[in-house]
Length: 166
Image 1 (spheres, rainbow, N blue to C red):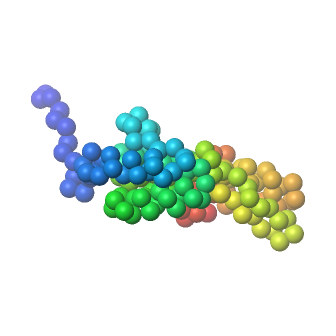
Image 2: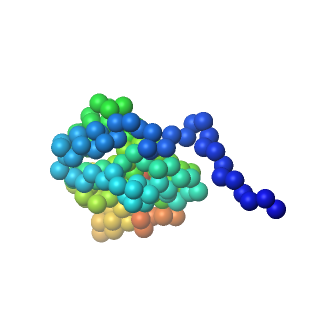
C-alpha cells in the first residue's frame, strides 16, 4: 500500500499565515485594548475548534475586558479588513465558533449579570455569562431562562444568541 499523501487545502481555505497584515493588526490591538491580545500559535490552536469536527485556525484572539475593548477591536479589524468572530464557550456542534478571523472570547472578563429585575422578568447580561449562572440567580425568584441546550452548564448567553441555539 503506498503512503498516504496530505490532502491539499480547498480553494476556500485561507491559512492564518496568508493574512498579510496580521502583525500590524496585532500591534494595533495591543496599542488600543486593555484586554488580552493573543496571536501566538498556541492560543490560535486552542481556538481552532469547537464542539464540532470543524477546524479553522484563527488570525488571532482578543479577550476584551469591557465594551470599549470590543468597540476598539472591531474598529481595528475593520481598518485591516480582518473578519471578526464572537465566541462563547465553543460548544457549537456545527463549526459556528471557529473560523479564519479574529476571535473575541467574552468568557473571561465579560461574564456578569448586569441587571436582574424579577418584577419585570427581565435580565441584562454580558455575552460571556454561562447559562446556568443566569438560571441559578433567576430560580431564586421562581424564574428561569427557558432554552435548555444540553451544554447548559458551560454554554454562554452570547454564544446561544449568536448561533441561534436559543
